[in-house]
Image 1: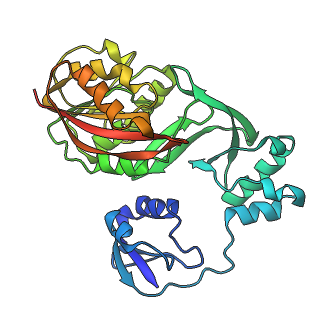
Image 2 (image 1 turned 135 degrees about the vertical axis):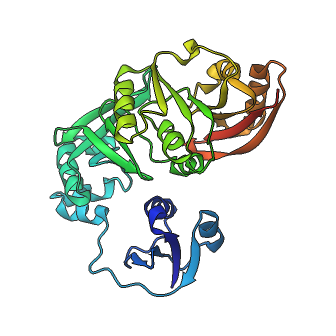
Image 3 (image 1 turned 90 degrees about the horizontal axis):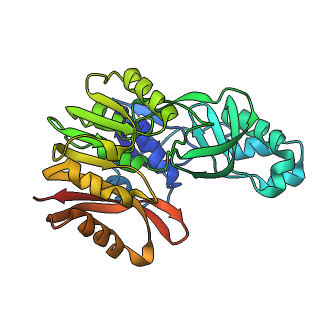
Length: 339
């Protein structure tokens, strides 16, 4: 059997990356040895991919898990209506101890019963249903509480604590790879501007892991801003992070930022002019946006060159963060402004 080996401190984030790729054996136990965590892998695993993600590979054995049942299996067993099993969701989002489900129309009359089954299956205190699209300037989700009452939770990710109200604010765990990349940067001595700070999704990796000297975190949503301040305190970086409430286009100063973080989607390009005004010569803009694949990278380069206004730029890094919708991807480009 192949095992992925990773230092204990990096194990949880690494395990989640492997699990999202469906390559972890669920019938075998993960175990620890000499400061490392070893994760059993499926037989058809792509070894090169595991190594690329930061793990080592070794051969060995792992104990069997007794009577392993997936959360989906448990939910199916708990649910008292066998006729609904074929419609149950196999994917969900767990933020702290709050579970967020997407349910097909056919399940809506039974949604509370379904929510109770999933709460038992995954150990959730509260279950929400996505009742509409995230939209508007505040990016507020539309949620319906199906089980439990308290929608506020603390989510742990990569050694960081994020407190939020899941009924009022979004939290995407689907971009963990990009958060880990940002966390791995060496930002010592640097000033970072986070233009779309939210509750601290990118601010905290910059401040806590990348060791930025100063992070100016701008957020327009008052609810998110209050949680941003609380999360800065929870993670002990009040001396590094300066939270700013308001529109990032009103930020004062020009040409002072070593890095500008643009962790947003769909309309990020509308703020590129401001990002270029904030970044110093030689600085880097971490530009995220959504692009139809048929026009990428041409559309991205056109937007960047127009916003640069004649300043020379160089693409240091680019990749897909995740699929956004059919034919559309959430992309990131690290753009160095040369002059």
